[in-house]
Length: 311
Length: 311
Image 1: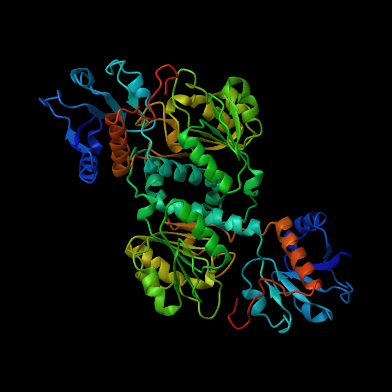
Image 2: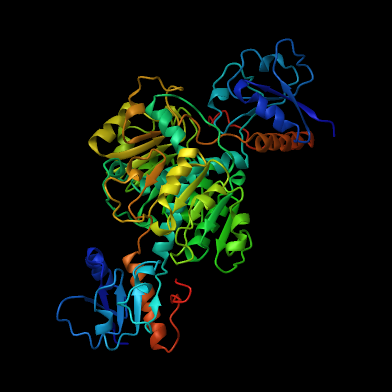
C-alpha cells in the first residue's frame, strides 16, 4: 500500500521528533507544513492549535487528527470545516503517562508530602501516620479512556475508586455515577478528587466553591483536565479555609501561567506546566496510521469527537 | 479454642493502637509488658527493640514475632535465646505500604521532580521531556516478599525491572540476578536503584562508591532497606559528581538522624523518617494469629529468620 501523506501543523516545537518517528511508521508519509505547499493531494491533517486557513484550503481533506486527548481547541475553531471528522488521540504512551502522573500525585496527597517536606526543611524527625489506601476514597471526574485507566491502577493499589461521567458507565470494581443529579453522591466523602474531564460548556467552571465544598474537609484536588474546569479563586479560598489541604495542577486558565499568578508560590499547590502526559511520537503516529488504514478499508474512524457533546 | 496470650513489648509508642486492634483478632489475648507480670503462661512475644532480660525470663516462650520485616535487631541481640524462632512480619498492610512508597519515589525520579520544583519556585513555565517508562531500567536489590511486590507493580507501569538477591529467584517478567558475581551485570545501565535488602554482614555498606559508580551516570537511589546499607559520604560524593542525580532515603545510619547531618538540607535528597511503610495493627496481629494457629496445629512457623543467613 502506498504511504498516505500526513500534514503536520500547529505544533512546531514537536515537528522534529514526529518527523523522525514517522520514518519507522508504515503507511504514513510525513509532510511538514510550509508556505506554498501543494495541498491538493493531502487527505489527512495532524493539528493541535488550529492553523488559520489551512484546513479549508485542503480540498480533499478527510480527517483531522488531534495531537492530544482534548479536542476543544479544534471543535471550537471556525477554522475547522464542520463536516470533517476530528479524531481524538488515543495511544498507549499518552494513556500510560497520564496514569503515571495521576498515581504519582495521588500518592503525594495520600502520604501528605507537605508534612514530610516541612519536617525535612525544619530538620525535624517526625514519623507520621497515614491511612491504608483502602481508607482513602478517590473520585475521578471524567471516566473515559484516561479516567478508566487511572481508576484501574488506583484500584490495584487498594484505593476505593468512584468514577463520574456524562453518560453512565459500568465497571466491575469502580462505583460509577453519571450526570448532574448524581454528582453530590459521587463527591460525598471523597478525600482525593481527580479531574480528567473534557472541556465543554457543561464542564466549564465545574471545579467551583460548591463542588469543592462537597468533598470531605481536608481533601485534595488533582486537575489534569483543562484550566477552564477550575474557578481559580475558589481553589485559593478552599485552601485558605482548610476545606482543601493541597492541590496538584497541570492545567491553567491561561497557559503559560502569568508570572504574577498566586499559584506559583502557593505552598500547597504543586504545579506542572501542562506536562502531565504527552503523546508519544511513535505511538501517536502508529495510532494515526491504524485509523488511516481503517478509513481506506471503508471503515469508520474510531475516537471521533462528537460536535454535539463537545468532546 | 482458647485465646493465646501475646506479650507486646519494646514498642511502647504503638501499644495503644495494637491493643485496640487486638480486640477484633480471634485467637489472641493481648498482654502489655509491665513490671511484675507473671510470664510463666505466656508463650508468644511480639517485640521490636529487644527488651533486656525479657525473653530469657519467659520459661515457656515458643516464638518471637518481629514487629517489622527487618529482624537484624533481634537476630543480633544477646537478649534473644538462640533456640527461639524469630518470625518476620509479612502482612498486606506492610507490603502494600512499601509498594506505595517505592512507586511514589520511582515516579518522582522518573519525572525528575527537582526540575519541576525548581521551575515552580522560579515562576518559570518550563515543560520538560521525560522518557517512557519502558526506557527507564529499574533495579531492586533484595528480591524477597517486598522486592517482588514492588517489582510486579513497576512492571505494570511499564518499567523494565531487574531483581538481585542472595539466592537466585525466577520470575516471568523480571530479570533475576543473584550473588556477588552477578551484581555488576545487574547494576549495568540502571537508572533507578531501589534497596530493599535485609541488613546482614554481607550487605552492610553495599551502597558504596563502587556500586554507585556502576549505575548509569545521573541515576537515582531509593533506600528503603536499612541505614547500614549506605556509606553516607559515598552518596554525598556521588551526588556532588553527578554520578547520582537524586536520592530518596527512608533509613539512616543513625535514627533519628542527628540535627546537623548534611542530608536534611541537601536539595536532591528527599527524606522520610523510617516511615515508608508501617505494619498495620489489624493485619499484623491477624498474621500472628495465623502463625500461632499453625504452631498449635503442629505445623512449622512461616517466615522464620535464618540465623545463618542473617535474615
